[in-house]
Length: 279
Image (tube, rainbow, N blue to C red; front, side):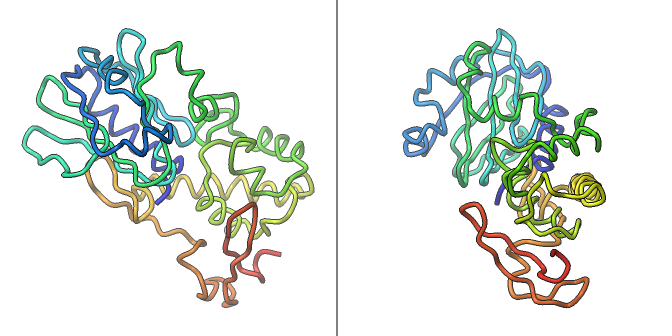
């Protein structure tokens, strides 16, 4: 299950509430050789041991990426984009049997991080952050949905400058907003009543307004409901948000018009639409 902006933001806020001021006592890597070989996790435990005796100063989130900033210019970059679980373990709570990284703190609490799909768990010094593709992509000048400069005017202008289909304009490294994955993309386009193969630069002002409003509403509802239903937050709780469009709607009827939902091939993947509502 993908971790998109709303879920990453929820975890970052919960981590900030629990971890500020804590000092790392120990780091353990487990069951992650394959992920290390793929570059998803630092190759050496010594990279993570640089976090030991460092104190959590602030936790930030942009797009799908969480930055845990420590003292002495150290960082833990977490981006479980295609699935992951980040859990807070209190002094009296059991540690999960399987994890990839465990950070133990001097107060006997701990955090475990597990990737269930593609993503990253990287310990990086400040001067190494430029080596991280995901950090550079999301901690960039591109707007994130909670930014004050994510306004309709800025969003509209960015769309008009993109002579590409909407998936390319909204998802991936060249998107006009960071933090939207394929799940959010299908959700907001259905809400806006727009076909995913339309070009961003050809949208009318009314369509751009509908799309902007759909993004804001989707993010707001997912934050209020604790993320998507398959998402597990920092405390082990499942979210309650059910996407209005996506693979869960395969062969079902559109809840607005009753037309059967269909699957389309797009941008090297698939998406689901209502062929009547999204023309």
